[in-house]
Length: 191
Image (spheres, rainbow, N blue to C red):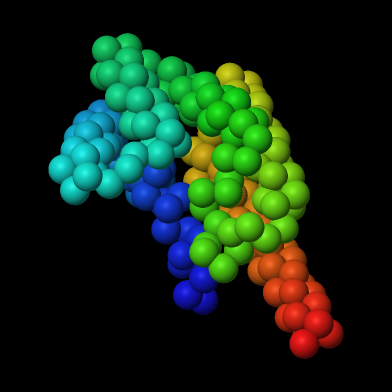
């Protein structure tokens, strides 16, 4: 499980403020308080990274920007429908970012880097598709079925991403192991 943690750590780091915001809402914290906490945590997290002179990935900047922009809008508008529809825009922005070829390479554990690059690139596009699907479903629930939106928000976005992460992890691990074994077999036959 050590490599699973290595794979998940950068992604959780980059999306920390967004994940915190979603977790607070799911836990029943009122949207105003959740917004303020997520905004303050996002700014603090990036400030800490800058203070430690660690690089800040584009996804982390995007996550912070989205939390700040939509958090500020939420504080001004005070409309529950806006709060429900807001994740649609966030998911679409993330989906657009994830259409960048090779964006996922940064998140591969060291042993997987340089291996199965085509699979890594393909999963980047699969993630973009999942984000677009999540955006569409969020908008449907927010507009057409607002009474069911909290249940949708509590289950689908997190469950679908955990499921895809698990499938990708197993697939990438198997592909990397195959490549390592093939490399070892080639070296053994040469020696």
